Image (cartoon, rainbow, N blue to C red; front, side):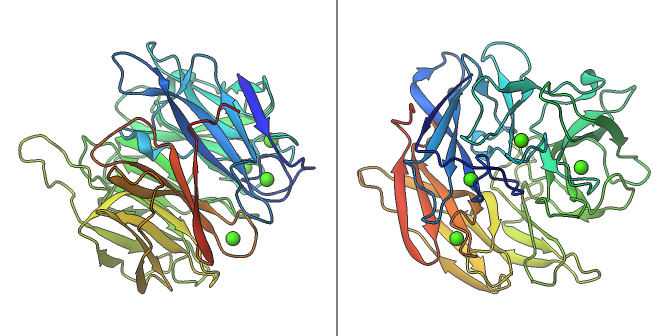
Length: 411
Ligand SMILES: [Ca+2]
Ligand SMILES: [Ca+2]
Ligand SMILES: [Ca+2]
Ligand SMILES: [Ca+2]
């Protein structure tokens, strides 16, 4: 792999899970496609990782690293390519956040889980390690979830995994950190979702809560599906037989939405549907449902008929309650103040306003460390599934949105 860097502030290491250069400011990882590298017979394009560095002045596209992986491409996360937002965690414990990614040769078989290592100047050139757990044949293809699942301060990875005998029996595995630079975890443990205590056991994908110091990270297992909105379970701690069921919805975000200090889960209808006859409405809710961590508070349902794509959770106004940003038809909306207030924050006007563009939130973080999170959004042509969007926006509750273009991000 190769890394080209521009204006990267040199760091000395930090404890943040999203600080790739260790300078104390969170960094944002996005992906960038390149039209000229379109691969025939494949609706996918070669993609690079782009790391945008936080600073006192916020994200600045002039401070970035571009990671290219020499013939391999970032693999989609599930059926929808736009769902990819690579996570970060300090997997080897050196004070620089690392980036686990799935990379594959476009025409060949399954992709491989690899780690891009962070360092004082951003990703380390040549520092790409293949994750080599025990019993690799049991891992199902999936992007990993990052967390500290045993709360020991070392970041871990969780993956969907099959049982020891049947490929159909779904479960998960935790690869515990710290990882060596050879990609080997400290230990690997497999866990099955027992049919007796789970509503289903065909795990399709996995997601984690965010890493919080001294806490065990919760894990979400989501049922496999055929395009319809499917169900999940959330486990506040793993391994455990204790879980809470989540209703149908393929958009999942965690946060503390009511500010009571407990972790909540938001589940939304991302708009995808099963196209089999009779399956068109399976699981459809056209709503966001909030499952509160405080039992037995019942879930809250917020009707949003035009809900599409992913949910992005962050505290954008600094009131110590997480907010939700999402796409509603052609609008971008924000639910804030304990999700009691709803605000339209679009439009995001592109300089070349000739086309009909759609904008949606991708990820969020407090990149300038002022106590309020900024949200990164991307724009793409309406009714188009590609190429990757080149136009990005940084939205800040206290400043005008700023836009940038990744087309010329060769370095
Ligand atoms: Ca940083
Ligand atoms: Ca590291
Ligand atoms: Ca751990
Ligand atoms: Ca901020």
